[in-house]
Length: 340
Image 1 (tube, rainbow, N blue to C red):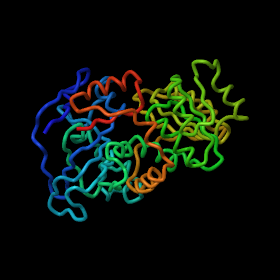
Image 2 (image 1 turned 45 degrees about the horizontal axis):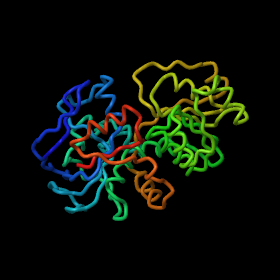
Image 3 (image 1 turned 30 degrees about the vertical axis):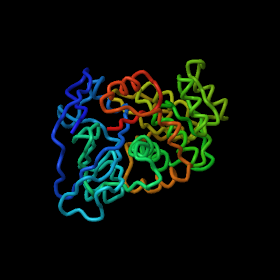
C-alpha cells in the first residue's frame, strides 16, 4: 500500500510503498477514505515533540473508512461497513476506563503516535473501538469527528461543564477552537471568540459566536472583556497551546470562573495563586474524548446542529500531503482532509 511515512523531525513526510497490514485477533483493517490533518502532527514534524513509537511511523489519527479485512474473534462487523476510528484507543478495563474516563486510560494508544496511523491507504484498529458511521454522512467529512469535533465536545460537555446561560470565551479559533465555539453554542452558552485571524473570526460568527475580538486591536483584553460582560466570563477555553494565551484566558474569568486548557504546550504556565484561591477559580485540562460520547456527536452532526462544512476547507491527495501540512503551518483554511 501507499503511505506517508514520518522519518524524523524537520523533514517532509515521504510517500512510500509498504506492506498492507493484516488484522490480528480482535482487529480489523480499515480502508481509509479520509483522515484529517491535525496540528498535533506539526508538533512531531516541526517542534521536536517525540512520538511514543520511534520513526519510521505513519502519522494520522483522525480517520474514517470501510472495513476491508477482519481478524479472528471479531463479531458485529462485516467487510464494507462504514466506520470511524477514535483518535485514542483504550484498554477497557483499567481504573479510568471503568469510571468512563477512557480518554485518560492507563494503557492509552493513539493512532499515529503509539502505533501506525492513517496517512495511508489502510490502517489496523481494534474492532472494539470502531464507531459506525451512518450512510448519509460522507466518510471524508465524518473523519474529523474523531478529533476535531470530539475533543471540543468533550471539553465543553464533560470538563468545562458548559450550561445554558454561561458566558464563554474561546481563545484561539483554529480547527479545535472553532468547534469549541459551535459545541458551546449548542450547549446554550453565549460565546465570545478571540483570535488574531479575521477570517477565523468570521467563521466563528457563522458557528454561533455573538462577539468576536481581535486581541491585536485591544490594549488590555482582561479589562475589555470584563466591561463587555459585566465582570468577566464564566468559562474560558484555551485552544492554542501557548502559556501566554493560557494566562490571558485565565485573566478573562469572573469570580467562580473556570479555565479549560485544550491546547498542548511543553512549557510551564505561571498564574496567580492568590486569584485562584480568593476568587474560587478552577483550572482544568481536557484531552481527547471518551468513546461514550461519539453516538451523541454523530446525532448532532446528522441533525445539523454541529456543522462540518465551515471547518473543512478541502481535501488533498496522499501524494500532496506535505502541501496540506504547509496549509496548516501557514494558517490557510481550517481543517484539511487527506483522501488516500
